[in-house]
Amino acid sequence: MGNMKYDSVIIGAGLSGLASGIRLAQFGKNVLVVEKHNIIGGLNSFYSRFGRKIDVGLHAITNFVKKGIFKSPLSKLLRQLRIPYDLLGLCEQNFSKIILRDKVAKFSNDFLLLESEIARLFPKSIDAFRKLVESIRAFDAYNEDSRQDMSTRTILSSLLQNRELEDMLLLPTLYYGSARENDVTWKQFVILFRSIFLEGFARPFEGIRKILALLVQKFQELGGEKRLRCEVQRIETSNGKVEGVVFSNGEFVKCDSVLSTIGYPETVKLYNREHFKETPKGQLSFCEAIAIFDRQPQDYGWNDTIIFFEKNPQFSYKKSSEEMATSSGVICLPNNFNYDNGQSMKEGFLRVTALANYEKWKNLPATAYQFMKKYCFDSLMEQAVKILGDKYLDFNVWKNNLLDRDFFTPLTIERFTGRVNGAIYGSPEKIYDGVLPIKNLFLCGTDQGFLGIIGSMLSGISIVNRHLLLGK
Ligand SMILES: Cc1cc2nc3c(=O)[nH]c(=O)nc-3n(C[C@H](O)[C@H](O)[C@H](O)COP(=O)(O)OP(=O)(O)OC[C@H]3O[C@@H](n4cnc5c(N)ncnc54)[C@H](O)[C@@H]3O)c2cc1C
Image (cartoon, rainbow, N blue to C red; front, top):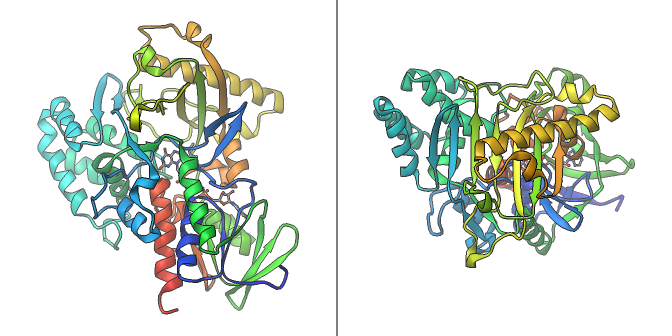
């Protein structure tokens, strides 16, 4: 192994690493994917707990379109990876909601539902909303555009002139992908708006492991090599060009190019510790509570798939001042997808995500950390039950129906993915062209500006197409 030379080494076996590995292997490249953990998937993985398989990240796969729709990120992805649509086993959501204090807008994979809800809630703004949607449809997010880095808040407030409507549209989009507090760049907003509202939510019955298994199988069939429990400690360079990578066991592997999926500051740290200090780092992280109960959510009258909520008068998407904030967040009920052939999950799952504060968790002594996790689990669940409706139960009774529970904090995210500050959405500065100052070192995934399950895979593919296949 020591003398082996690869065309490309990919750092990270998350979705972008696996997708880019497949693409390179399809073109006969000799490619190695390395992952520091003993399991693949990164931010979107799964784990076993008392015999149950629990998804780490998956709420819903965004970008859903029906089979046969060609001009969409999902169909492009499947075409490039040569994966038949049906193999993903995607099942559509029931419906989701945006709750801003006392205003509730329902939406589904049929965009007309959202449009009619906006017309009902904001009759004076419906024309402005339609204009906004037209400009989103017309925007070419995959090409350079003068507005791409502009503040979405600025654009929305001049187009809509209605702060409540602006907040309602930003609630799902910021929660599903913004690395910036209270705002997002216009380019990323357009990508997120399309993926959530104009396309939609779906999920395979088996969760993320169905997709991960598919990707690994494909990668290995094409001759790609992967190594788990293999951490890149350094990217070796000479005269500003990649030479290879050094693993934490000291082994050096030579390669022509390196594709990093681990994030912008995290990658810089592997070749220049001084520059790392100046590289902008993400500050936004989350907590998530997962409750598994002995009945279906429908038994409590809960039929929603995903709810984005804000209880304060204005939507605030920022680092929490306490360990976690319960005033705003995302509720997900994975049981509430239309699974094929009437399949239904045996147990009920409820996941609730909320904004957190990395430093606060980091500074807690071990016993206080455990106590705080329990406290935050209870307060987040209590809030979720209030929002979902407690007609059929009171929270304390509901707790008796719990089979299991889990809770993750920004420290859990940092430990399992290596993301600085546990920042799921990475650095606030994105490297859209994937080019770093070292020759033959490229960045893809979250910090290239495309995130989510489909987005990060497409990112991997487009960086490979753009930099590693052309002219070779
Ligand atoms: C709680 C949560 C909920 C989410 N929900 C959704 C959702 O519902 N829908 C959706 O579309 N998206 C969701 N996402 C986002 C989605 O999971 C990510 O955008 C996507 O998985 C990013 O993939 P990636 O390959 O770019 O990065 P990552 O998944 O971070 O992959 C990078 C990999 O590199 C590895 N690594 C790091 N450093 C090193 C090193 N030095 N050497 C070797 N390996 C290293 C890491 O262990 C990791 O496996 C969610 C994320 C989280 C955390």
